[in-house]
Length: 416
Image (cartoon, rainbow, N blue to C red; front, side, top):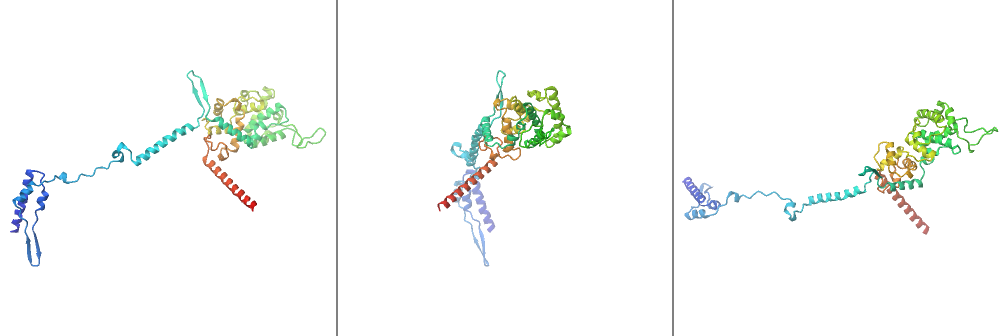
């Protein structure tokens, strides 16, 4: 029967395979299986055709036994190895493109940083030597910055401090003693007050404090014209004689006028009783007066007595010098001590007016005009707003370009 025939063929194949395994594992099972074909029964119409399998002979068995087989580990392809990076595969351990870019960026950064640190402005420093002495090293490039600002201010002296500063508000025809007193009063009024407001209040004191008014009667009964020089009414005697309310009314426009009125009346009495109706001739004595601090005292000594015992530091000087990176101070008094430790004595008198004028015109507390400053683009000012400088340069280039086009048009018209 067909079933017995199939079983006999299968038994022969199994016997051949077992024989090949006993002899060697290298005989090929694929060739043995390839020579065996299952019998198929094909139905065509009503008949049935049978295709018998090829009989396996002893030669076939011997060929199966001598055939070389492959182990499962040899037949199966090994799994693909993990792709190595370009750093491991390339010779010389050269990094990949991405790694190369990273290394290049790091090298560029390392090159830029030292240059930036070398050009960075250094503030003042205190260096202690081995013997215990302390040496103060001034901030870098301070003299260059100072000279640039000084030249800029001399070429354009339009700040209020240039014409209405406290040193300019004394009455020119008054006696030296009265002028010194007037300078002290102007400094006391200027605290927390703009120079323009202080000038108006001083003008009222000069003209309305005593019996003299805008028009003064002469001995013959006539009146002086406004153009004629007359004496100031701002004297120590008139301040002592005027009432508290009247003095407060005259200086009502300045900041903290109530306190200043009280201080001025107290100072007048102290000067009369202790200093022979004159102001003290030292900063230490001036600072003992009510309402007078270090800034007023040192500025008064310079303007009234011509003695430069210290630097008058106000909010402008304090703000701008810290903005420049000259030092890191929190109060004007700390700024004064820092400046006096290294700034040459010859500049103590002028630095206040220099930086106050700069702070009133260009380096404003709010809305700095860096494009109008001569320090712009030099890399010296630490607080420079580069956007304002670039905007100013663009405007200048547009102006120059427009002017050049207009001149070229003029030349064409003139030639035609």
